[in-house]
Each structure stands twice: as C-alpha cells, then as structure tokens.
Amino acid sequence: MSSTLAHDGENAQKTLLESYETLLSRVAHMHELADAEQWAELIDQRTHYVVLVEQLRELDATAVLDAPAQQRKAELLERILEHDVDIRRRLVSRRDELGKLIGVTQRQRDLHRAYAPQQGAEGHYSADDADETRST
Image 1 (cartoon, rainbow, N blue to C red):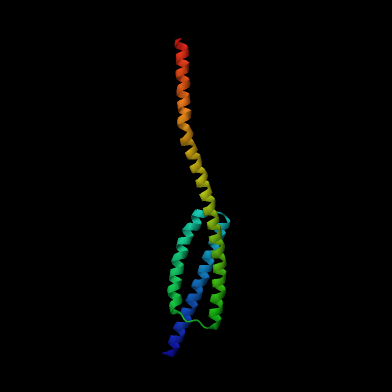
Image 2 (cartoon, rainbow, N blue to C red; image 1 turned 30 degrees about the vertical axis):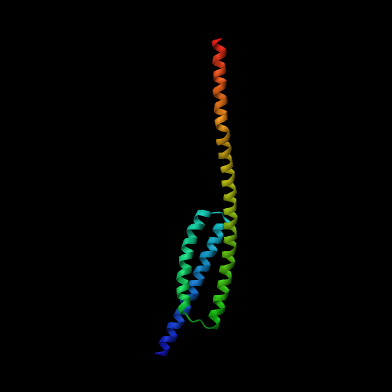
C-alpha cells in the first residue's frame, strides 16, 4: 500500500512539474508574440494562460514535492515570472500608446466639431453674397 502511495506521489510530482513546464512554454510563446507586437493573438493566448494557471494552482495544492522537485519548480517559476513581467510591461506600454492615439483622435474630432459648423456657415454666406452680387 505504501508503495502505491509513493508511486501516486511521484506521479503527482511529475504531473505538477510538467504543468509548470507547459506554463513556461506558453508564457515564452506569449513573450514572442509581444516581441512581434501581435497584440490580438497575445490577448487570446493570455486567456488560455490564465486557465492553465488556475489548473496549476489546484494541482499545486495537492502535490507534495521532494527537494529536487521543489528546486525545479522554483527555477521554472522564476523563468515564468521573468517572461510575465516583461509581457506586462509591454502591454502597459501598448495601452499607453493606444491611450495617446485615442486622445489625439478625440482632440481631432472635437476640433472638427468646433470648426466644421463655422466652415459650413462661411460657405453659406459666401454663396449668398455671390447671389446678391449677381442680382444687382
């Protein structure tokens, strides 16, 4: 019976570490997408990443790791977090860039709204002036 429990523990440990490796692979791919500025695909991948993190959290709560497995998990986590921090930094930068573009667009729209009626009115007055000149 104890050999079965030990075998189950080894399987849980192996499954957990494989899940961390999968997460590392996923976040490395997301980092490549950020480097390539493929924002839509990055956001799509981020959704899958969050699901994987939740599954990993459940596995992590039940698995007991020996010292070498704990060390491997720590190494994987460090690499995952390095990628994640850089991805977040790039996303914030992209958000700020889009915010500036939206601000410029809003200012252009506001200027257009402010001056377009005057331009239309000037055109109207000019046409009336031309009609008066012709009629006299």
